[in-house]
Image (cartoon, rainbow over all chains, first blue to last red; front, top):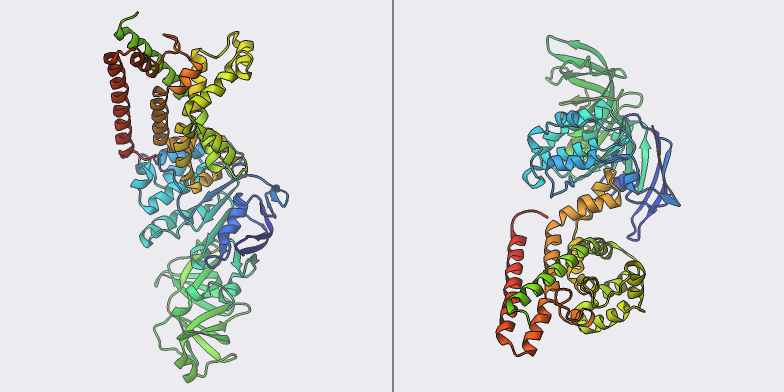
Length: 357
Length: 226
């Protein structure tokens, strides 16, 4: 389904957002960017909450908005899950869900029983929003959106207002939902690792602009990546090679290198995305063999960037594959690290993000 | 002359019926009007709001006077009534209902508009994102969420109509069983120097108002959200 959002939005407050997105959305498009970069505004444009913005919005061949027109949200077949669950306080969970099931706009919807089962809502149906925990509220809100007819779902940082416990409670549901691909999804997040697991496309909001990123790997390790400061880490695009049942390790390859990760990944698909946090990568200038770290990757330092106390090193270890390593300034001086220096990257941990098709 | 008891009972019946009818009309008219006042960005909001609030500041006799002119057989409202129902409005129960609606309008619309103004607009966005249009949003979200404010506004409108005097005197006159309400009956008793009868009516109105308001305020403070 084609998703087109093109135009510029200007607010009296000085806020400016240019969007140039035209993609064939057949899965999950993640929109990442720092707070205030315009991610939520981008979603509001699609949802219809900025009907007077001179922006063209087309979904699946239907024009929802153009400089001289704008359909109100209830006439767009799009369901939105908000950061704050926005449940109706005077209705119990069942009443909140009933609100959606009575909607008559065009689009497909999931069955009530199916959604209640999927989100384990049965025990919560008679409870009022103020009786629910943050995670439970968000589950009800998610269910409410799934029950309304839609052709596209928008998730606006659905986990950002939750505490860690609630986050880990709802994350599997979101993951399941996205992987099932019941509907195209635009998923906004300020955390690349959070959405990487589900994303088929990545859009970036930065410097007042929303645009598409072609290579997640290159984007994740680029020094201009707006997310780098928070949680620097490289995304590596791998292929499954083999599984060793004796040690329960899967071997994944990218370029000329291999990585070993725990668990049998033979069934997760051919392409696997790995997220490797920069803080878990050390650099050695000579080959290290007798060390417990399994994952050692050869590469060449591409660039260094000082970040406060530490230095972020970008290591090229394949055609267009990069790793990020966080090292101390002292190490940079003692090992004479610099662009062009051959290094071995020692990777302590690898988070597996089952990848896009 | 009828007995005091029968006279009071009859006047109380007219008063109750008038207040009930007026309140029902107001509960249909006021919520959309209050919603519009609370939400619109139209340049017409201030004059409309002022028009609704007029009975708060004008002597009831002023409004009663203009309504009397309008309801006369050659007045605009009277002419319509003549054409439709074959009878004029002035000095009828129907005329009294119209006058009471105008007079009690700010007491129902005002509190509702204040309540609507504080509503979290994010919830409206959420409803809209579920495919619910403006009319259904109003009926299924706004009204149920404000059921307390609606009841409070209704009670206030009812109690205020029960206590009305000036407008009734101007457009209703004093026809027993038709337009003679308690406040008029009280005035009559005083003019006749029947202070015992006046006491009975005055005490009835006082106790009624006090009890109704007490129960309303107590109910408003109780748990139920909305």
